[in-house]
Length: 197
Ligand SMILES: Cc1cc2nc3c(=O)[nH]c(=O)nc-3n(C[C@H](O)[C@H](O)[C@H](O)COP(=O)(O)O)c2cc1C
Image 1 (cartoon, rainbow, N blue to C red):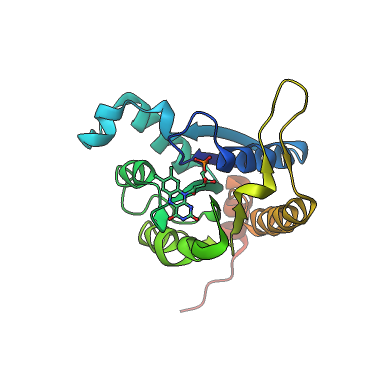
Image 2 (cartoon, rainbow, N blue to C red; image 1 turned 135 degrees about the vertical axis):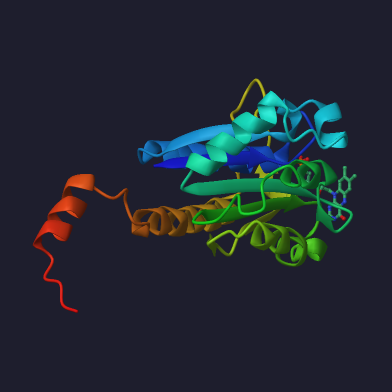
């Protein structure tokens, strides 16, 4: 099982990225492979000039194609998701999220824009044909503590609980996905099928 984790914050110290890291570790502890990307990993020129053929973009597309699910996190910028994340999503093929489960995550300065995920990010994920979009997790800055030398990153208990509930839903949705078809089983079914005309 493979999940791609995509961080949409251009900031080096990022609260939405803390959420993504906690989520990624939670999935890894349950045996799911998580491959992490962030908008900061991409050359700004590739994003600004929409270079679909950049090697890093191609690598992301390959991982997304193979993935069963996507964790995507963004800061709220001007009542929407970050422009850098939009520039990156614009480089994905039209049906990039077909057959995938997506858990959107966002952090903002206040609760005023908590619907930004619903009215801004989810329509873009739907345009990429995400098969199943989970409700999503929204956090305010005061609920997320960065890692410092004296202490690791941490989340307010209420946020930790909501995030874990969403991750359990993601885990269950991933488990429901049909596994790869066993060629031996297919041959057996075809050989033993009773055909009628
Ligand atoms: C350019 C900019 C615009 C922002 N606009 C909003 C906004 O409209 N609504 C809001 O709640 N927070 C807004 N914020 C606050 C961020 O969403 C918030 O601090 C978020 O947790 C930052 O996430 P990050 O640390 O992952 O980048 C803005 C921050 C910046 C830098």
